[in-house]
Every structure is written in C-alpha cells, then in structure tokens.
Amino acid sequence: MGTLILKLYRNRALRFAIIGGIGIPVNMLALALFQYLLGNDATWKYLIANAAAFEVGTIINFVLNQLFTYGDQKPTTLKGWIIKGFKAQIANLSAFLVAYIISSGLHLLLHLNEYIANPISLVLNFIYKYLVSDKFVFRTTKQKLEVEEVAS
Image (cartoon, rainbow, N blue to C red; front, side):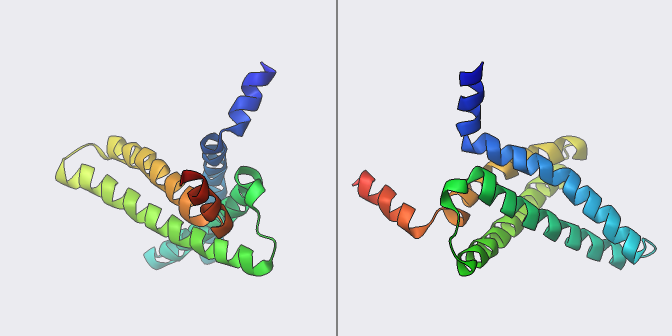
C-alpha cells in the first residue's frame, strides 16, 4: 500500500490534478467574496468579480503547483518567480479560451447538452493545461537543455 501511495505521489499529472481540484473551491470562495464586496446587482459587477476570482485561483494554483508539483524546479530569485508567474497567467488564459471554444462549439454547433459539453471541455482543458504548464511554465531553460542533450 505504501509503495502505491509513493508511486501515485511521484505522478506529476496527478499532483497537478489535485492542485486543480483545490482551485475549484478557492475560485468559488473568491467569487463569493468579490460579489459580496461589489454587490451582485449588476452584470458588470459579476464580470469584475468573476475575473478577480479567476485571478486569485490562478495565483494560488501557480504557487501550490510550484511548491508541490514542481518543487524540484523552484525559482531561486524573485525575477524567476515573476517570470514563471507571468507564464502561468498566459497558460491559464489560453486554457480558459480553449475550454470556452470547445464547450461553446460542442453546445452551439453540435447541439450537445451544455451539461455534457462543459465537462468534456474541462477534461480536454486539463490535458491542454497540464501539457502547456509542464513544457512552458515550470520547465527551466537549464532543464530543457539537459533534456535536449540526453535526447541527442
């Protein structure tokens, strides 16, 4: 049993998924907080609250992934943290766009029920986001060079 747990712990994709799962209630709580602070009497207030909650979730997921999922690749300088944080923003925004396009396309073009289209888009979004994060956000230039040297 201990070996299985250790094997699961070493699986980076699983750790990434766990952090993503933690991000869902974080986002929901942040959304509730921002809606409470702004009031929910206007659409524009919801849009601001939703964007702010997305940002809170993005930052917390980035930090948790950097510490837990990619702890072996932690930046050693403030500049390194900022650069990786900026890359995480780009990855998250592109992942959001991918999920939005897939979900909307499945629902509006293929007439799939939205409660089926949305989970499908989330699964595909997770795969996309993990691959982009693994290759673009968390991997350092030194590690890319080491991988290329081993491959050649």
